[in-house]
Every structure is written in C-alpha cells, then in structure tokens.
Image 1 (cartoon, rainbow, N blue to C red):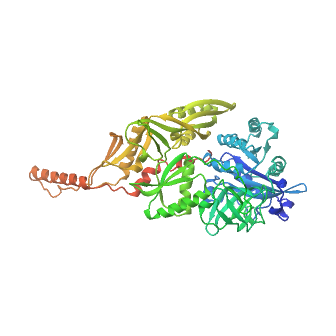
Image 2: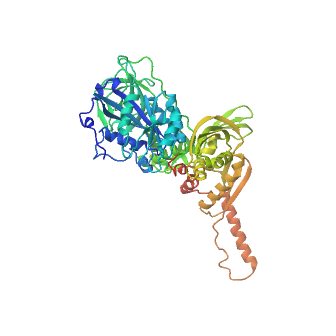
Image 3: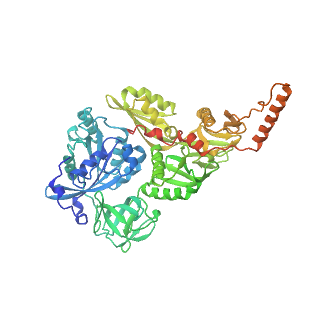
Length: 625
C-alpha cells in the first residue's frame, strides 16, 4: 500500500473556505484501457480521501457494469486535498470515459475544468480516441499535461511514445511525465505539476450566483441530486435557487462536495465543484447544461450551455410484458437524468405492441442503456435492429425524415440521403492494405493517410454511418489482429441508392423485421433473415411462406412446412383411389385452414431474430477500442 503524506492525515480543508486561487479543476482523458481509473485510485490514496481499509480497484466506477467490463461509463467528480509547500490546495478531479460512444460525457467534464491530463499507455502509444479527446480539450482551451502511464510494464516503450506525445502537443520528450498508476511511481510529481500548471478558476465572487449543471442522478429517497460547477457568486443552504431555463424555484436543502463520498458544506464559492439537493422528485426539473442562480438576486445572463448531442443510432425498446410499459417510461425518465445523451419518444409496433424509439450515440451506448434498464429497473426488453436517420425526398418535393423502417414512404422516391461520418483509424503500417480493403467494401472514400511514426499509420475515411454501426469495429479488429483503433464523428449526409426490405409471413408484413439497406445488400439481408426465421418460427397446422420483398418484388423465400397427420395409417392395402381421396381431403382442409389461420410468432422468436442483428454485443467483445 502506498504511503499517505502526513498533510493528508490532518484535518480536511474546509471546502467553503477555499479561495479560488487554491482550487485546481482538472480531468483525466484517455483511450479505453489506458489506466485512467487506476491512476485515479492512486491519487485518492495519496491525498488520503480514501483510507487503505476502504480502498478497492476502480474506486470511482460505481456501477456493476463498469466493474464487470473494466470500462468507465459515467464521469465521476471527486475533491482531494493536497499540500504544496505551505499552501493547502483543493484538487477537483473528474475521471472520464474513454469510449467514443461516451464522448458527450467527456465534453461536459471538460467544460467544468481548466486543465486536462492526457494519459497514454506506454506499451500501446497514441490511439484514435486519444487524438479525439485531445482535440476536444484544445477546443475548450485547457492546459494539457501529457502523461505516459504503465511504465512498469515489460512491453513499455516510454522513450518512443514520449517523442510521439511531445510532437502531438508541442514540447520536448523529457517534459512528458512518466507514471505508473499500478505502483504509484510519479503520481506525487503529477499532483505537484497539476498545482503548478493548471490555472486557478476565474469568477466574480461579488456577482449574482451562477453555477453550471454538468451532471445529475436520481436518488430514491432524496430525489434529484444535481452536480454543479460554481462560476460566479456563492450558493448557500436554505436559500431559494432558480433554474434559469425553466424558471423553476426550489429551496436548497443540502449543499456539499464529493470527497469521494458526499460531505455537507456551508456553501459553494467561485470555482468549486459540488452537489445540490432540493428534494425535488420531478426528473425534468434538473437539465444538464442549465444555469443555477439565486432566486432573490438572479443573474441577468445564463452561462453558455452544452450543445445537445445528436443521436447516431436508433433502436426500438419494447417490454416483453406489455403491462411493463409505464415502468419502462419511468425508467427512461430517470436514466435520462443520469445520461443526458439519451433521446426517446413513444412508438407502437403491430408485432411488439407499445414501446419507445430511442436514440443512442453508438452500439456500446445502446447495449449499456439496455443492460442498465434490465438490471436497475428489473425489466425484460426486446430491442429492434439499430438503424440510422434517413432523409427521403419524394418526386412531388415533400421530404420525410425516417428513424424507423416502418416510416419509409411508399411511392415514387426521388432521393434518399444517409448520414456519413469521418472515421479515423490508427493501425500498424503492416495492416494498411487490410484496413483499406475493409473501408472500400463498406462504401468508404479515402480522405488521407499520415505516418505518425515509422510503424504507425493514421488513415482518414468518409463512411456511411449505417455501415459502421453493425459489425465494422469487429471486422476491423479481426483484420488487424486487434491492433487497430477507431474513432468517428458525424459529417453531414450524402445521397445513396437505398431500399426498404420487408419481411412477410403468409403475405402479412411484420414491421419489426423490416430494414433499410443499400440496394446491393438487399438480397443478402433477405436471404439471411428468411433463413433465420425459418429456424425459429414454430411449425403450424398449415404451410407458412416467409418472404423478403423490396416493394412488390419478392427477392427471397423460405417455407415452414405444415405439421401433417398420417391419414393413410388406417389403410391396409386396397384400391389406390381410397388413399387418394383421404390425401385430397387433407389437402383441402389445410388450404381452408391457411385462409383463415394466422401465424403465431412467439416473443422468443423476435428476441432470437433481432438480438444478433444489433443489440451491440459485437462492439464490446474487445474493450480496447
């Protein structure tokens, strides 16, 4: 166990008495699996806010899913005391996710900070998400501290990657700090460097109070808990506060800081990060990006909020038991509070009943949200195959926005536009050909290629989003033996030759299985889906045709054979006309039954058919994205 400085064992700094010049707000940004949470653990131990008996790996990862998968999903803020010479400083750290699907969490954290630690694995080097997070931090004009982690690994190459990192952020390789989150080497020097290099927060202590909401959670007993970064003035317990976007006013029941458990204080001043509790149970009252001010002396102008995230992938979520629909609606409301990137609206399906069309930032986001709904709210859900948003222009000039294949219009279509993304792939130079082949197969256009070093290449492609959200990442990892990394961002839209493939059961369309695909891939999708449904739909008393159609044209067909009774069992020889008569009678009965019968598709069949097409499992088999 690491030694704890004597300063950390003394009485904690009184948070309400900390002047702004002694506060440092910073976050840790990195690619997945580069050691952010482990480094945060060492900082918590060194500063004494977590005692040795309470310490555990990934201390700030509170959710079971985070600990099981070894990834950070939610940003976590924590306040740490640190003695530098004679001055007791207060360090507010925010540990951020590293996966591309949770970039919105990272951007909100950056807006609450003045500095960022850019962490790079000394054995893996710079990855795609490292670059993306660095550009985000530069947009917020933060002080960047480059750090190499995991220097204790046998495969570490600190000299090589320090030169890469120095070339990226500007500076000399010897200025790149080398640390080990596992052993604690260099962490004390890093904390000192944060005090020296990260600027103190700036604000007017005499102005009306203004605080930015950067996160919030729902507590069953205490209602909405709001996390804020104070910018101007101060907030105190028992005063009335106002949410500037909704004009709602509440009494401030409790105010405090997270260190790393909630600690009550007498108020929050300029530059401090803490939490507010008003006892409000309505989850819509606390909106991320809103400004909190005093109701008696309100501020004239709100703070600049966050850009609302645009959903990249849409999927339908339906309860298996229809009576769980109100529970699902309440669960999404509460999860929206904890995950501001979530968007949803009610929808109905002929096959699946009442549910919600939910917008996600990516497949991992979809999978995590579904898993949280099932675990935290005890729901059994079906998720339909994910799809993206299309703009369809008809020949009469009208435009239809399609978020669900069932909304795809019939009639004469002039143009269909699909969203595209700018993708950055970092890979060893030996796999350039494999990456190019994959991107070309997915209708990609190459934008450029740069060698970051003699054995690492950055490739930039423009790709349709629909080609990325299914199994692109899985195929990329397979072709590069796990060494490539991927990052992408939205980049407008383009016209494409897209069609809607319908699945028909006995001539009736089943909307849950419909999909919008490129014209060249329509036949493949139709054959795959009809073959899968043939295996999972139970046999009926009559023959059931399963067809895939584009418009009025059938492109694939499978048949579920009828359950037949052996009507000839009682015939012991005799004239053939007797047997023929019995077979004809059975044939007429089956024909009559087919006209009046309906195909019963069990819920299990929907789960089986839809799960492998996109509940996101492929995206996370290798967490080193």
